Image (cartoon, rainbow, N blue to C red; front, side):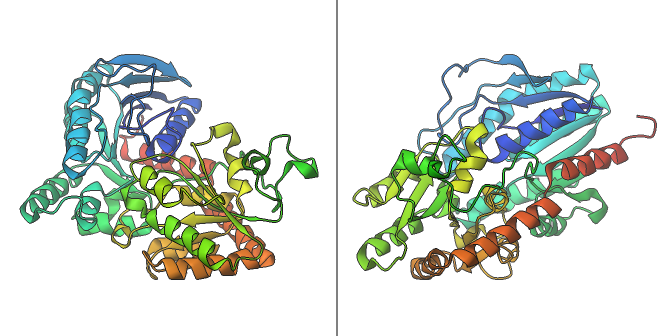
Length: 422
């Protein structure tokens, strides 16, 4: 197949949409498909274009057998509701001539990823003119999330944008998304069931090392130790958050819980918090924790160390605002589960996030620091319980979210929408 992928995020982004788009593109190329990617310079989650990439001009490169076009994009220093719209619109505008030019290549599939919804019209136009099939992949219901989380509030604007979204979605040959609750939401927007496909994010099980529960250099299994780097005692429990530090995460609860541990000093063994990542909410979290010597901050870790880093945790923390329920399934959850460590998550019971985490951790109501604190006390005090939950998480991922299985199924689904003989 000849496939064009339009995605605002791509390699070398380490998390979220960029990570999964890159892995999908390289996997398809390795299977003999010819893949072109239209993307922006890397900027996420720092919200700053990386050095070495052009800010104002188009560029072209090859990565893992994939031809990559990078289109200029405006990146706000402090993203808000309005500036996010302008940011996404800038990519839709700059990428339009590049994706339209793919008509002359005669691709079979035009695959666009939401966000941004703005880019969907260009994908549809290109597919219709070029005789390709149009596929929309929804990683995040950006419109619903923007209004439900209060980033945008104008009711008439909401009606207009949701109407445009519904109009566009119904015209794609296939709409896929990452969770069953999000599939149901696509159905509610008027897309026929036969045109909707569950395409979840995945874990590369072959690359995941099931490291021991207590990972440190002293046992001779690793030359490099994050515990030693951060000077965390071997008898301390590590509670970790790793990922984007943005508006939807509700990260302030982590600072509130850390302060409770300082005040109450109940934890046995003692807890150290490791917060890894970047984003617009990081500065506030750092400020919350500035007097806490048991809280450590790190930048995002390189891919080659990711499995070791995630396995350094004894407990993974997954905060989330209540308004984000079932609008997006956090991609970081899969890495947490694959690391064989338990998860403590904020979610309302009955949501898909809660249903998954119940296999491998504890659930507390969103934005409830007291409940989060008490649940963290329970997990920190019971090593056997943590080990049981961690093993269940790894088992779930290996059976349901194996990278090769998911991508083989997706490849087969793409072939089904093409005319016979292709």
